[in-house]
Length: 350
Image (cartoon, rainbow, N blue to C red; front, side, top):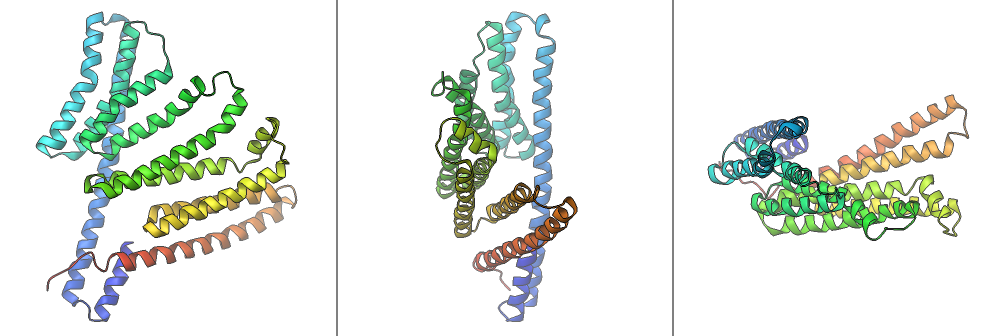
């Protein structure tokens, strides 16, 4: 994007829309913004890794010293484990409003240790482990902190926990007593619905307030990605075989063709939505999965038909040409976005 904006600035300068001094200042601001974003991503990654490591260390410490810890100390620790980091995160992010990386790390530790605290309480009172209830209560207890902190990382944790919770919930309720093979074949549809919910929720958050725009973007991306992955899983032969084994009276080849066409149609649908929303990340993701789909189908169709050497020669040529065409189309789309979105966003005084 930086390169395309730079070309756009040069174009404005040639047409005398802006002066040389304005163009120089705009380029400097773009370079500064890009550098700052790179540093922020590095700091964010380090704080996340550090938070996960600390949380894992605390859990391992409790587990290794479980038998020697007094009963009252275990309960006291179960309360303090999530409370202290969450209070620290609130003070840093909302009261002091500084050291964002430290506050983010404390928030991650606090939300993750909610689960650890619940596990400690369960061990103290010898409660029977039920993963459905455990994950459900963890999500319910973590959900308020999404609205308190309004941070994307809290949404990520709740989204991942919900994704793990869905199959446990279904197998304990809807799929209880049902043939396991049938239940597993139904999961892609369930996760496809979940992906749609995430995407719609992302659109709602993005249009709500500035505080939720970044979260809305994340939810749209993760919803689109999850939907594509689930649809991609249905394009394989094992999925059609499973449906046939369950009594679906449709020829296996016909099922494969239907699911492959549905996957391509879904990619086109997501691409159209992404183009309208000028979502560059989603557009790149669609082209990646389309390229992967072509590669997988090539191996499926021609592996047994061609001699090995000819297979790789022809395949390499197809992949190179395909990669060139896809990259060319992707750049064309993104160049159009950069030209349209930057024109009216920034004004510079002489």
